[in-house]
Image (cartoon, rainbow, N blue to C red; front, side):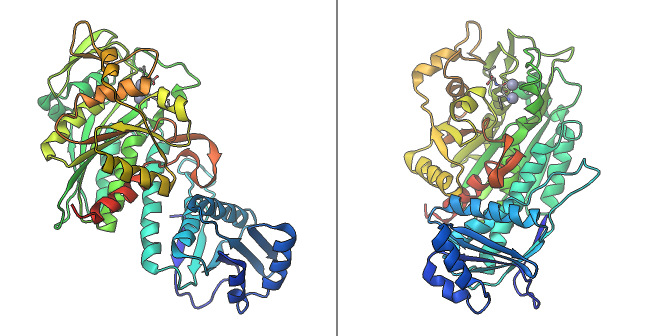
Length: 471
Ligand code: BES
Ligand code: ZN
Ligand code: ZN
């Protein structure tokens, strides 16, 4: 962890952040800061919502929080950037603003502290110590936020790990290790077991690789749970495209991130087990790389999936849907009340909305969809729903098999969704295509650069809502 949180330090730091929502509240800070009069002058002359005074005896920030949580997360990011630039590593936080808005600020600040420097000789790292001096923010809320931030970092770390370290077997070992630090169980199927089960999608994708696939089951089952939710995550550890090779550079060099869907699932299960939510959650992660080795499937091969469906593989780069299909079929065993899958599935989804949200589609009812969209707006991992109209199904009909694994030149994100839908009979389901937002090639405020950990905060917020809902 790159930061430390404390609540009752005897010796407060000389650096401080003051959060407020209205100018009248500034009086409250008079006793702890001699800057409030100066500040008032500065605000009226400059009209700024974020003001800081950096002096020898310390730095103080005065931040007028916004009604919009995302603006406050960005204030948190700005504040952290200034603190690190000026090399302050201790700061007190005081607030007279509402808890939720203040927490959004803290969230943005904490998420900004992330670094991935495992492979750097010079491990530059923030060691920020944040001390809370406010009755407005409860210790419980900060601890919960801390869990969510840590879980997002877990997902980011997995995504940022290169394939030279994180192959399917290593991933399984790391997931097992992660479960020991929390309260969930990990069961790992090796290649032999995957063959016995006849997971033809996962085995087909793995055929061109000398590395073995794994199928990972993460299960968090508290005593009081009523509903069972299954989370499925695409775990393509590296996507070369297989024999339908991707061009490089340009697209292949980002493909260590093709397991980001599964990283979101792992991060979310870690979080909900730490938060002890009263809900039974199962994570299914089919893991393999996609390579053009000697025995790789060739375009036009027909494979038989776990469900018994046959698929004509016309493009080996449309591999995500093949591994997900087996996991979605396997999910039926749990009689789930809802299945959610996360995947960096199509360039089409990324082209449609870029990195500013998540493309989703599925068969869940409107109430579930609305709840998900509400969570998306709250955590600012916004959802855009695409239709699964039956006419699109025509595009994945094969001449010789039950299905083919590509549609056509149009509606690529939807035809991928239509393909998955075939394997989801019997339960309500939503699919999340995070191809655009999982790996950022340019820095974006508190999300930073590279692995974003997208999906974790959305899932945690949604599962919290679901655990608290009555039926
Ligand atoms: N992993 C890719 C999708 C992807 C693209 C993720 C860009 C992140 C950024 C996926 O396996 C893929 O290659 N999809 C193909 C499907 C096509 C061949 C039908 C695509 O979207 O181009
Ligand atoms: Zn691919
Ligand atoms: Zn892929």
